[in-house]
Length: 288
Length: 290
Image (cartoon, rainbow over all chains, first blue to last red; front, side, top):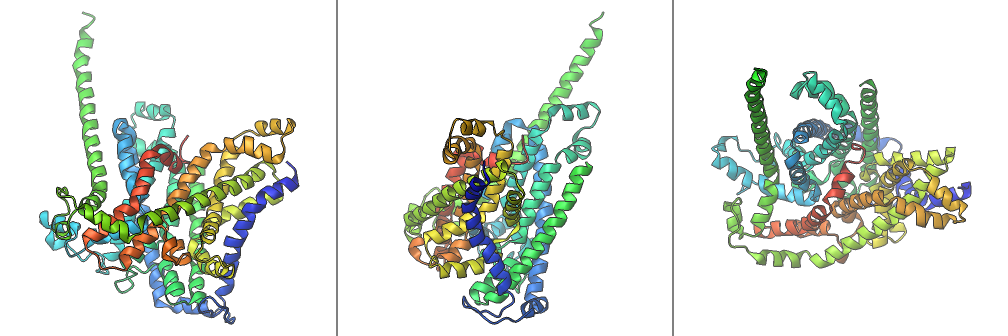
């Protein structure tokens, strides 16, 4: 292949990517230094938007919520998924059936999931409260999405419901790719169950751990749809997230400049978290 | 007798085997119960969608013994369902075709022509994986407006294609790297030009990767709300997901109206999943298996 051919082959993809991703990215950074409202220009204002952002209680709340949500989702989702994969690995007969059932929620659109769970959590005839009534747990009932104490976790639970099967599928694929003799050797040495998991499986599962943690971190740092549908960020900003606040600033209040400032902050946050986590996980993969 | 030790261990071994079998049965049942619990919300969605409003709010768990098909007729009409499905198909297919051709060409050049600039190009593409859609969406709106592509199919298709490009290039490159270049070199020796080699050798070679990527694109486009919400404004261009949002967002809803809308919104992908389950699982497992 000659250089000119290579260039021509890369050109269409490169052009599309440059015009619709890189250029908007640069424009976005540029926009964050202006006071533009709505789609038209605006004057340069230096770092005003960034200063404003750090003093904006809504943004600080959104940042905190996003981080809490990310930690809860990453830990619970991957923990449960790993446990299920460990379990399913041994149960060949029901493996495909269980995997398919657990994957089904991940095939649904966030919008549909959001409305479905709003109904399930509803204090007026919602199935969750009806079930708790029937089990005699009425005293534990809350207005799940209306109580600042529970709203964010109620949404995190829905996300975990959607994607645990997805993560478990990835862990299971890793399990199935392990050379069985490695596990058998461990069994013969007396490492069974939890002990084998801790000594052997944990390190052999490093590749899927990297994939799963990366996917769940990226997915939950940009969480938008579920709070957008279920709570609109309420009550009292208890479920306000960075992406939701970007949307509200840019497309509800038409503060395009401030919205993109928040977006640049989200990009920086994603890059920092992403690089840190990739370094940690890769070092772990090498160590093991 | 020499058989004495054997007769002693046989019952013990049998007991152990029985114990193991009981253990397997119990954990199978527990796991099936967990799977059923996971699917319970989906069951509730379908069951309540076939009930009257009052029945749905008093007993969401029971089977819909008197199915209210009229609920579906209403939702079907309110969502402009056929139009929405057609719109989504147009956008999905165009995005898939455009992404597959452009990304596979780029990946082919990146993998087979290794120079510093192709490596840099690859790194720039892959860096795009970290860019959240919200970072680019506001300027993207402005650019499409300037190009008069706002609220058009080409506009949203180009946006989806560009946003999918990092993953597509990354995915095709990874796949091609694992394949020796011999076939392509032989074709070149036989006098195939660049285009013929790409068309007759590279594209067929990439078929499994293309299948997986297509599923990813289908999932992404069918389930996305953000881009249609921001880039498409006219009713006759809305996607299924946007139709779900627009229908529910503008009405005060009873369960008899809400849930059929949701079921109609998710059913196409459920069907895709059930038919192509093997490919979906393979696609999700990329990188963790084999």
